[in-house]
Length: 49
Image (cartoon, rainbow, N blue to C red; front, top):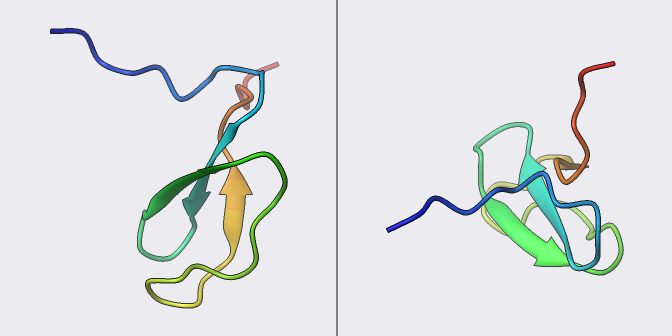
């Protein structure tokens, strides 16, 4: 059983809440986290340069 790679650069993108870690998939940036109201960030692109 493999682990899903969230760093796929194609839609739908994976967004993660910076406060609670909740993850959702969406084609565009969602609003605040539905779990805690925190900011969602796109983790579909690697942050490394």
